[in-house]
Length: 135
Length: 406
Image (cartoon, rainbow over all chains, first blue to last red):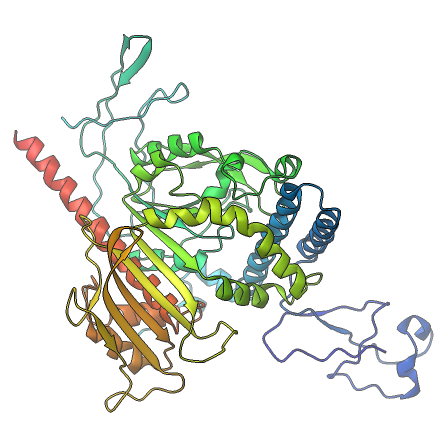
């Protein structure tokens, strides 16, 4: 059983009911103790409250960019292990750097876009919900 | 009649001056009537075409900003555009992966868009993005010059996610054009076009600490991979990017703090603002007495600071055989009154009212660096750029008035 502690910092938290990942959620208290060892897949037909599985993805990078970053790191390590041409090695790590920067921007963007009211108010500051009074 | 000098290339044959649609910035706008007349003269095989425009020359002020790692200087950009008023946004309705930021008065262009090789191309040739061979400096010069003279351009887009070159987007000439990237001062022709240039110099230790903070949470990254990435890029960086700092009008140097022995977290920073002397529209910030050497610790009886405190230093120096003045801050701000206290003792800030620097820092207190020298000096440079812009505009207006009289 994997236990993932809920991140205390402001991290994006995704709720997902994935079959493969079984996480002890702090919010939902499981009633039967022995059932914790069973995967949710085996719970078919048994009446039990649906478990909320919390996957705390620290800083929540969009998965596709995250994939690219890990792939590029692997490729860079391979390229430099062979020690082919110094240029190839440098180019590969440069790609890693570029993708990591893109991932970091994507994270920031997600954080910035997380509040729909803020986004709406940015474009429509004169509406009633968005009015601010300085005095 | 004022003559607009228009750079002509085989692809640009007409002069067009476009004015951005939004007029909420408070800048006085006049309708520009464009009268084009083409006279094509052939001299020794070279075709020149002259275009005459009536009314004001819509010339843009161009600022260059150089630093490592793509266009992640967005904090600086946001502070800068905030000084001018308004928030900078990516162009609406265009490519969502566009690197351009547009506000009422400012347009920020990412120089990565001038890559001549996309990611696959660079991998094949074994070249990093730092290498000049991966960048099209001719196109960069052509388009920056066109924008400077009030001609809209179709600028390519480099997509950082896919690593490909996307179809171009239209960029209209703004009042202030900022070009940020790895090589704004590399090509001498582009350097000539810049009205002001800034270099962000992060020391290796601080760079390492920041990259760890940025990448450690990323799946796949480890301390070794981060280190390897920095090491692999270092030769190209030292050869092509670093030498640009001698050409910069202002350098913001970020170093590890001297207040905490053995600190490697990179949270408390020592930041130095190196300002070139003798520039026409730029007067360096100073502490107490211009041209003297000062060492100042504001924390004492009037101001209480928490650990590790704040240290200031100011003095003249030479930097790559240029005369400079250096203003240095080590430590961090904790409270509003520390900020305003420091601001009240700095001179030549080009603020429009008392407390403007503090107000700008507080407005963006969520931005990284808002409590140390990076935020402070970025804000100050932003105010200096605003002052430079206003001086240039006033000069041009005076020149037009002179020409009209004659």
